[in-house]
Image 1 (cartoon, rainbow, N blue to C red):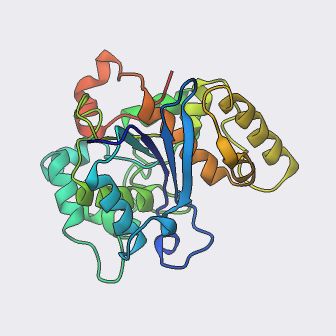
Image 2 (cartoon, rainbow, N blue to C red):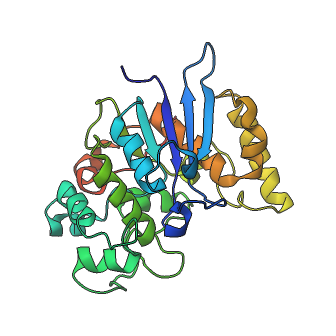
Image 3 (cartoon, rainbow, N blue to C red):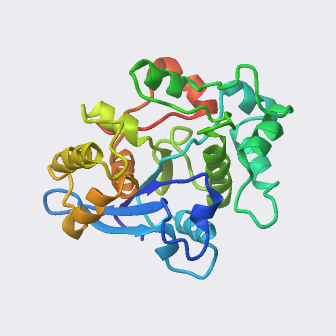
Length: 275
């Protein structure tokens, strides 16, 4: 029987964050369950603290493959701009291609290698930072987005490479390609979720007084939507842990893609946000 819970996963494209013994990993998993009133945050751990003896990346893949949850949402891109997906033969072919060429000693490809694999040329591309339709929609609302195929400074390509490799291993139904299957995975984006709720969606990471104040404001709002249990102090101290909880809301409920982007979302995916 599937456990009645939703998972939110803050992610990383930095291979070092997935290594055994990494005590500063920014990969967090939030476990949210139904409660008598509000949903309850029942667990909040770094990926290294998941049970098992496999490398942490594979532990997370095994957790997702097991499907012991209603839905899970991950803060990382599930696809690429449509033209690149079509070039390799569709979304499933994209996952299989990325999963078949992981370098020895690494959990996933480097960002530049991903770009060359799917585009057939070394980065930078022309244009350098192509965006998916979902990213364009959030950019117009003032949310900073990263191109899934930008391998330069603060690029999104490493995160994309990591997530596509994870999805290949997990082999679970993906939203919005699949809408109703239990154990499905969805793409989340904490900044988009915060913008949807009218909350500060940038500048809340770090130890500055202003960043802490913004996290505190976000937590006051979240406390009206989820029982945070003993985790408030952790969430106030870590924007990454906070992002994992924000991702869980995209697992619990989510806006459907607009009708005019349904076709492209079958190639590019769509960022899920909760009402």
